[in-house]
Image 1 (tube, one colour):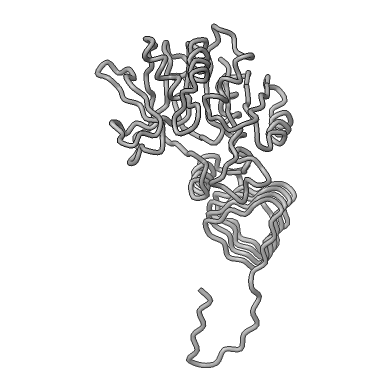
Image 2 (cartoon, helix red, strand yellow):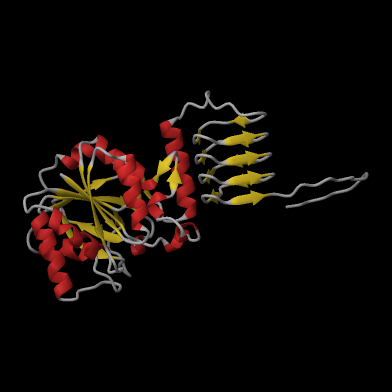
Length: 330
């Protein structure tokens, strides 16, 4: 099985962080989002990867080649934002007609039963029930348990089963044919060539798709979801914090601290991830992600996302407060 991972998006919802690095490389719980995805798939037996890169794609290529030297990685450039369907179609030269493929969006972290999905006798699409499906691809399932209809971001959804961005496809040749037909016919939805439209064309041609439920789904395209995902993964990975030795500093697990950090007179945690070579002094940090080489002094941070090389210096006060005085800096 080959994995296709589209990571060409600009990541507008995470600006200003994505002005200088791809969304897929934003660190959470000790490694970039893309690192968690690639490591999970590789641990479950996938060794061939096709990454669809675009904006700042050279950084993604450098990261993958350095961090995963033992995988067979191919990189395809998507030069224009024509949608995920177009991105997947670009991978066709690296996929044989009889290859099974697994498509995973490069900003999506899910908990799933990999054995069930990888060894299924038919194509399977990951789904999760959501309160408002209008912002997602939506699947409708018939009485036999197969998908009868899929639609991208419907204005009036007839199902609350959102497609979570994980697709196991057995009929890869039919998928690429459907994508090519849609592009030839200029069949777009919301201005883009979507993967959902191509999959629906396959359903109309008689291909059987089943759904599989995911236990947790994190579409890491917003700050708040990144913070929540960081907390969950830190609790799951349970890094050993007993080796962290910093002057006058209290560590409250779960916490990840990268190599080369200089931390003094701080309270760190819970649910904090700090990149390598960061400098923290006289600060209290919890439920936050601090990027590599960031410098933070005299600050109290909660549910914060601090980028690489950022500098934050809080207020330093020298006060002489008389009786019956109230001062509120909040």
